[in-house]
Figure 1 (cartoon, rainbow, N blue to C red):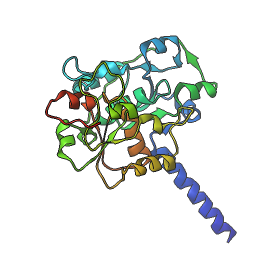
Figure 2: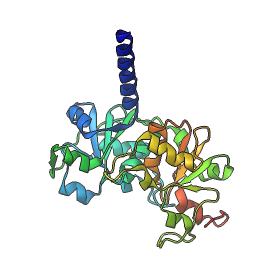
Figure 3: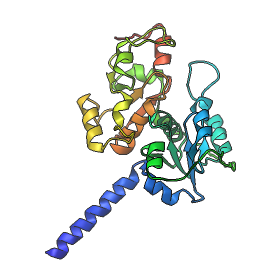
Figure 4: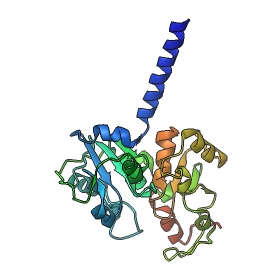
Length: 284
């Protein structure tokens, strides 16, 4: 009987370990163990100014603003070929393990996480707790820029994670607005929007609800309660948007990697595109 109990305990441990590895989050402790491996690349998605002040040793810098088209709707991503060229120039390959971190908001790492998933990168993770967790673990930081050896990034575009305006209009999906309640209701001050409010039928789940007070992603059970309470269930197609696509990424990660929702997309045109088309209705 004792042997059977031990076997069950060991099996449960292995199953939990496998589940943890399947999630696209990595702790500061676990990252420190692999950071010097040749097939691992660390990416700071913080601002250029913050990167110059201090960054995790060995990190390269990618500014999400450089990923967008020069004209048209603000913050819509460039072509896969252009994005792949940017990644390769930073030493990021689609075959490497790519670790992302930001200022603790999850916004910028989440944005790049989704972009890389769209490009078909095989192994992308976010450093849980970001720079604060790294410093708390007393791991090495520097202000010296990392030497970058160019790599080849071959895009394998995953169209299943990108939603167009036409798909949003089609209906049938649960639309999730990742902005603040004030933005959702159209009461927030804005210099970029001509029509404030939200896409009709969208439910409001602010991106900040994904993280705890330390900037770490909340446990799966807590995340599931948040989404379930808003009617966002696994059996439905889910399309997440914010104002410009940046804040939607961390919710995409929570839904796909942590909660294992099978059909989740980000509306890249976001509310900026939606409200710019006069024929599109806006709710408040």
